[in-house]
Picture 1 (cartoon, rainbow, N blue to C red):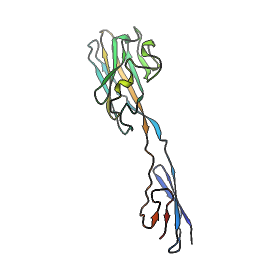
Picture 2 (picture 1 turned 135 degrees about the vertical axis):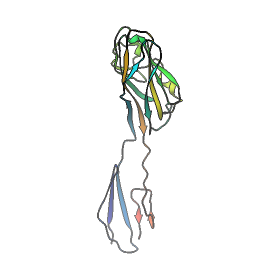
Picture 3 (picture 1 turned 90 degrees about the horizontal axis):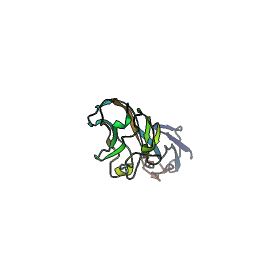
Picture 4 (picture 1 turned 90 degrees about the vertical axis):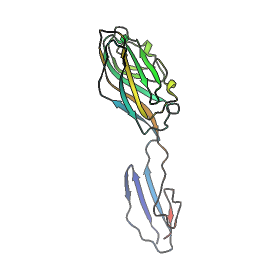
Length: 212
């Protein structure tokens, strides 16, 4: 009068084997299977709205991105993986580009780089590597920013981030086309709960025993 009931969990879907019958007072073991997601994965947030940069005024234009659901929740514990952007502008050295975290702290990504070259095309700022000051327009590839990301270590990850750009010389115009910011997201280890738990032992494991 013993048998096994198998329950399989894959993402949000749950499947079970057929019902079983056991004798009163006997025990049976339930077996659960779960397909776990990776404990750490990268998550990217983007803004694809275009923002015109005021010409020659030094006034910044801001493109926001709201980040949510990331753990750990501080930059010190969960450093930025990358900030990637596309900006059209003739005479790149007119521009200063900044990143502001949800707490208000501001760092400079690039200032007066590129000389008379044009555009920032698929430009990514990363924690380590070649400095943006050593690059040439259109700066395609990965570079470290003027100010290190570690200057944002006290910032919250979740909240509204802003990419800002300012043009300090008239005669050349440009636009923030899009940008993205990427963080690692650490998923907590799964927990298991069976219900009801009457006459059940090991109810917080994948293989509890039930004695009806």
